[in-house]
Length: 242
Length: 216
Image 1 (tube, each protein chain N blue to C red):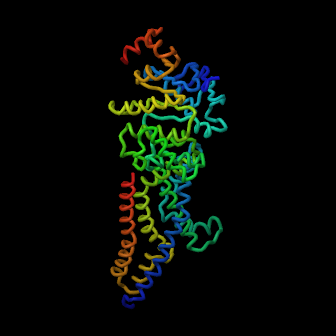
Image 2: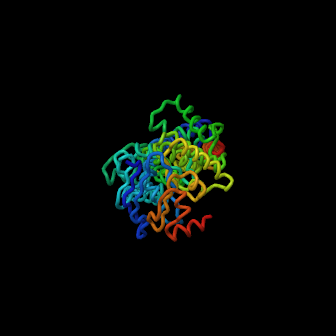
Image 3: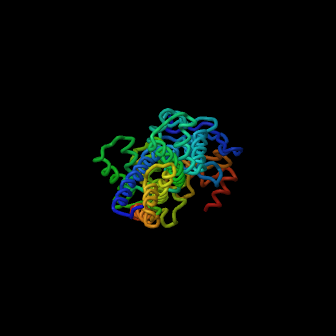
């Protein structure tokens, strides 16, 4: 059974139908990259996976559990599914350490003594152990995004979602964030990404999903998909982002 | 007629206690009520939001004097309830505080980006935990200067209680002025006391603001 099973999901915002029957599987340990033009429904689909958006019809199951905003154990579910946003969304009034340990302290009931080692551990994995006492606003965008990733890692998620996490970064800072994500991929983390980084999609992902007009237009292994796009839409998209 | 003396200063000090008591009562009861209004005003449940908005509008729309008259003179007439002056006046200031602080804090809560709630929710925090640890502290920081500003308003506003005969600082000023025929001196001293009370607050708010800004 796939870790994430998305079946015929539809979602509208007012009159606009953003997802028009999307189906998709994500297997454990898989890196799935969702690409497509703005407005194709990529981010909405991602946000549906951890119930930040409520789907109108269809179903999403994660680890066999049906996902919806009204699900009984939504909070426990979200502890297992990390999401990283384009705008980082760090807590500006807390230090890096507190940003990371707030949720584990409150939800996992870890002791105060375990909090700092935990923060150091996850910060080490994103190469920022020396910034543990820093304030978010003192960090560069790339560092802030790595802290946001570390904050998710501290919850020991089974699945991580990345919503255009490098789009708000200066070009020279993109690499450091992508490198962290590559490391995570190598360690076997299941990841679903919405991204415009075609290099990352090509080299790291196991599966590319091309979305167009609210549907999965094409999907497959990156080498195959990039070399032989079957539809004119994907062909023109690949040409436009080259 | 007698001349202004030490006894008059003592009466000011005595009356000042009641000014302070009024402010403390208003804060002790109005503060929690303000928090309740601020949170319901920003609640996801629309009828609650409307209720809180209506209450805030009502309190802010009625002059403080009107509130005082209602609770001091109106309650016995309309509701048939006789309460001690401190209770009646205290209720008026409690509502006044709730209405204004509630609105100030609502502004603070709304000034925190919605994405901050979302980030908390995505980490599996309850709505209360999100408010308590993420939204509240940021809202408090933004609300601090206007909150202290309101506190200064409140302290000065307690002088209105003198109109219904509650003996606080301003009322003591009236009494001394009438007894000594030295209104300039009496009211001058009263004004100086109000100023001395409010100035440290204003300064405190500035240092607090600076410290909180430094800490982010």
